Image (cartoon, rainbow, N blue to C red; front, side, top):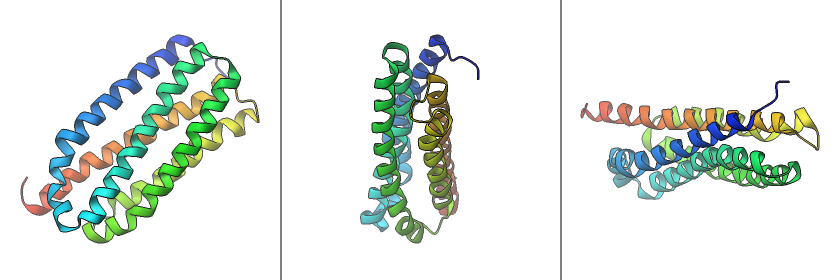
Length: 176
């Protein structure tokens, strides 16, 4: 397995921090206005699902940010503890969003988010299991890098689904 350099990890942390910022801007200023009409029809379903979805994407981007930075400056035991803690938080957030997607799909009639949740759940399982499967109880920084890369990919997939669904919603309402 190829050694993972500090420079690579710091670049990944920079990318992840940038994606967090862009995601927050997108959620609060762009996507929120695109789904305001949906929320008026079912406020008890749409808003909680989007809060859950926002939470999991932020966790997906926070994992590479935090883990990349700690892999550079902290010892391996601290990295493993951080990864285990973030894995628990990620799984809990995934369960929350997965529990809410069924009602959201019923209200919107779109299965895009359901498919995203199913693929995202598989990605969360891969993120959590891969480092432990590769490194056993003592995953190395190379093993943990797989979780970092998978987390970035899963976050990007979720954001892409969200952005493209805004266009789908606008088109079905005749606003595009």
